[in-house]
Image 1 (cartoon, helix red, strand yellow):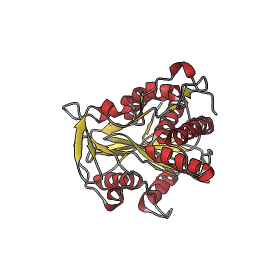
Image 2 (image 1 turned 180 degrees about the horizontal axis):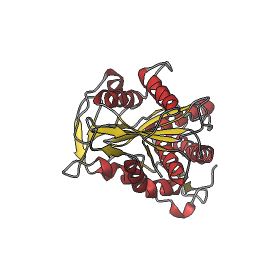
Image 3 (image 1 turned 45 degrees about the vertical axis):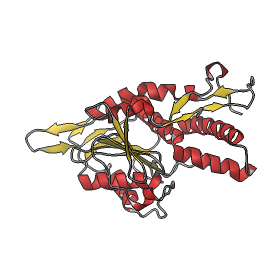
Image 4 (image 1 turned 135 degrees about the vertical axis):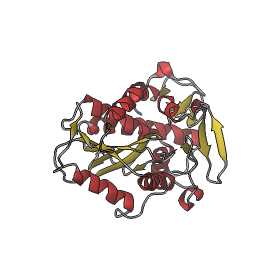
Length: 306
């Protein structure tokens, strides 16, 4: 059992896997977020009413015990930093008023701002229903069929351990590309395009693509080999690239898709209502990520972000 915080256990508490500090950036002009279900039904609500699990980060027993605890406090730091991280992401973009082109912006050195971003990314991945489902399947694979309460307890315990190890292994790891879109909006789901495993906590050959706002997404990748600098690049993308990323979000999601104004067209993979993954490495998004990471080196950059 991982060490938890007994003093903060609140039975019945709603623990958000899409935290309020992030989901608030997805509100439309009426303050609502849209959720679309696999059958196409659309539900509007305040951001805080979506994407939570009762006792999702608590490990509880049928009868109250001194062994009970919570890992909810593990996510205090990324949730507190989420708004500042998004502001950092926005500052990566520069606009050339004369040529009407986006200027590539880079950060040559790693720094605390990038580790904050990595921590936020990991917090979203580990809390996601897709990752939790993978951990639950792992528990059932070792223990066989369990009562729901015991399965949930073991899953939460493993989730906390995985998160701590991933954070430790993430410092200064990999490259980041900040994607900006003015022509189409990203969607968010209960699954994230990521090859982070629930069984292995190292980040070798990492691939993650995750939306932060309807207009900003982040690629985090750590291929087997790559040049050491620069660590980060900003890039404007077109509507077709946004669609490619949104379709990947649908593939990896099962029950929940969120959007601000632009309602996505449901694809077959999401309609099947399963957490699915791309079967081959050589899919379009994999190649897009690889090409970008390779393109980070050997380019003449016009703007350096500090």
